[in-house]
Image 1 (cartoon, rainbow, N blue to C red):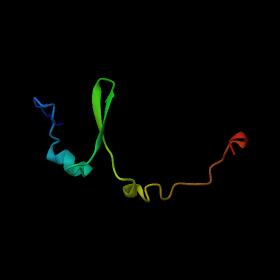
Image 2 (tube, helix red, strand yellow):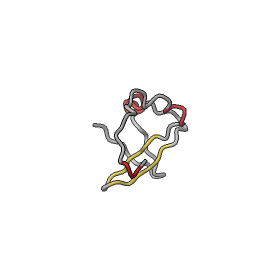
Image 3 (cartoon, rainbow, N blue to C red):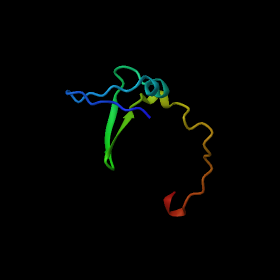
Length: 68
C-alpha cells in the first residue's frame, strides 16, 4: 500500500504502479466521489472503449409479465 501527499494546491500524484495497473494517461478525466469518509477516483473512459464489454452476457432472461 502506497501513500501520497496532498500538495498546497490540493494536487495528488498517482504512483506509477497505480497508473500502469489502471492504464491512466495524462488528461484522462476522473470523477471524484466522496464515499463513507474516503475519496474515490473513477476514470471516465470514452464510450468506444466499452465496445464488446458485455460480450457473452446471456440475453435470454425471464421477464415479469407486467414489465414487457
